[in-house]
Image 1: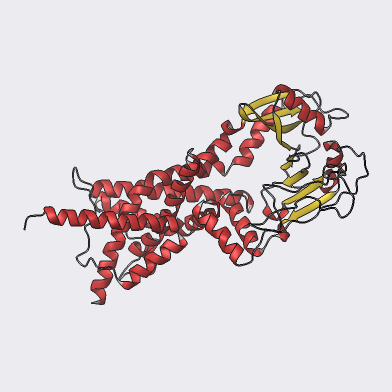
Image 2 (image 1 turned 90 degrees about the vertical axis):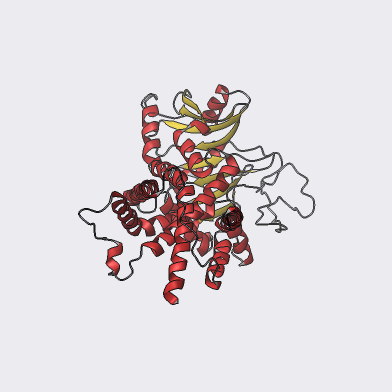
Length: 456
């Protein structure tokens, strides 16, 4: 009886693996190719900048202040506003990168620090690595595309798990999972099946870790993860990305207790924190160059982004965006006094967020240098091999003119263990759980319809 139940379960898992594989294959190849390309973003962008810098004037003597560099960029696009300034990676870098928002959307400019000449000007979304990232994350279709990517990534996780179950040897040594026996005159389909299983065994854990590390970026899973953190009391140290910090306006009425501005919000109904300025009456806004005087000695990990105050009384934000997450830091400065208002370092985050940040570095190929990039390429090539070999197995197996769907097992009832597995799946991978339930309903409807059409 136990053997019969195992056979029924194996048949059902094979059926799920088959349908999921056909659905996922084209998306898996796209994600693998774009992911492999994006791994080399640092090298590619360094090469692009080197070609631009080759046209810059030699650095000699004093360079333009940051305010003049920004003004030169805006002069090329009248009416545009500053999104961010990326500081030169070293004192010898002859250009600074300026991102503007204008009537035509976002644009990125490289400005000569000596002459103020705009050496290169491109639409930000058309930059190759940003375009590749958009394909990888949204399939160029915004939130709808992001949901599709989440569904496919969730099912890729299930494919790896079900593949291990199906491929695990029964009655033969365990090491045959990694080194199957290839017969001299085996049918091509059988050879491809063993290649498919062996590839999954060798790179399955690596691909699984990359897929899991990408889940916090997704819409449904990522939002649920944030909610769980809030329930667990794992709050963020401050608002790094959508900054609502405010400099205290020195021209405001200071009679009585000053309430200051809102520091940050960590959720609905988060309390506001007062900020007071020590600037005397009549103080004017400081030039960015003065703010940056406190930045240079700290030698933040490049690239270092400078974001302007948001609104009349916002703050300057300096953010290190280096590939090594422990070295990243975000600092907010009062635009009136230049005083540091808030600093967020890696160690200020809770341990869960630190772990997720490090796993993100691994996903991007930036956790431990070039070897991390090599692992990413191996994983991408493995996914492509699994996709191609799976498609060949299906194509060689299917009857002419038919899909070749594995038949339903004779025992169609779902065991309690399988029901629990589906429920757990729906909790951990909600998009996979929803699509699985939809697939089971469709499968049931088609089966019932087929039985009614069958002759009695």
